[in-house]
Length: 139
View: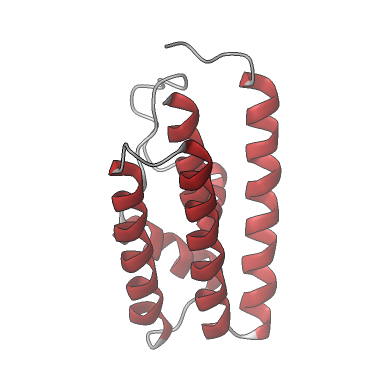
């Protein structure tokens, strides 16, 4: 189950928020790096994307709607305990790809480059985390 949670977090994080959070950690409060991480709120995701991509006033509500819809669908998938892990991962991946494509369609060429860079950085960050903690799956 922890592996599934990590994958779900990865999917959401790849939606650019984790890259932003990695660069500017919002609340490091307890410093519990080993504990489960929470999914960033829709507001936090939208705010971070606005700041990092320079979203216009026209783009912000459109991006927020995409983030809200994706967040809602991901929560439903995460709550379905009857779904096989592989199916859950595939659905999450598909959701992430669709959401990224929708956001990308709203962006200017400059913003698209920034968005792609954020996603590349997050993928690399998650690869590193998986390699570092790959054998550490306490139950």
